[in-house]
Amino acid sequence: MPWVTSMSWLLLFTMVVLNTRAQVSSTVEPWRPHVSAAAAYEQSGDVSQAETELKRAAADAVRGGGDGPAYAQVLYATGAFYDDIGDFAQAERALCRSLRLWRKLRGAQDLASAPVVNRLASLYLELGEVQVAERLDLEGWARLLEADWPGSLDLVHMLQNLAILRSWNGRFAESEMLFEKALALLPADSLAERAILQNNLGIACLRTKHQEGAVEHLRASLELWEQLRGPDDRNTGLSCHSLAIAYQAVGNTEEVEPLLKRALRIAEKQFGENSARTAAILQTYSEFLRKAKRKAEAKVMEARSKKIMASARVSSTEVVDVSERGLRGGR
Image (cartoon, rainbow, N blue to C red; front, side, top):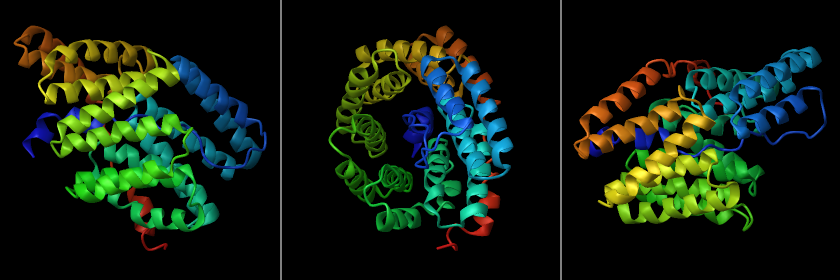
């Protein structure tokens, strides 16, 4: 589909960030306060200090038990952090290490792996690495979660990732059904999760050329994030980016640039000037400027985006070690 190619940054980089947490024991251990501190620093935009806290958490986890469950959890938190800020290569490495370790410790079917599988899937789908995401057997994981954790957020996330995968494969009716199923499972007070689903459903609508539906869902997502986290939160910024592209798709160009300016300002503060998430917005902005015949401005933004993305690619080979042992065959 040429439209997908020309609007690739919409589909590759506007999925809203999931929460950095695993459903595991709440026992207080030395590494846990560092993970909590890292999440707080990340939320405030202090990426450097968040990274430092995660390194301290890893050191404490290794001291406490080597390659045990604690270290697997810290690797997951680290991978989710790098995914959040748009360092996809480091995110992939940490998440794949976490998944391999969980499988070694608990086996292929243990539900401790579910949050890691979900996060890896969202990373690959965000990057358009559809064939790599398919190796994770999301459908099999969804069946396992429905049997053992039918009310869990992990099931909601798995259904959402499966819905996104179906939309990539052109199976839009199935995709919509899976999104609706995920929404129906959410408790009434799970507003952040609802905002995430609305955002990603909006993006799926854009893939089907259902632009009016996309605007509706993306506007709802933005309004929820503004209520929940305020006007300068990173998820607010990501939703601004998504909604700007939807408005451009329906020809409402007056709304586009204010949203892109806002999204770029938030991204540079929250993710950093060299984040792939910032690069995504720069690319969208450059495309908008070219259509507006502002070529000089467009060239500057496009050059910045390309420079960032040159060092932000994932290898897509990290997951091979996982798939060879057979997530699919492990069921």
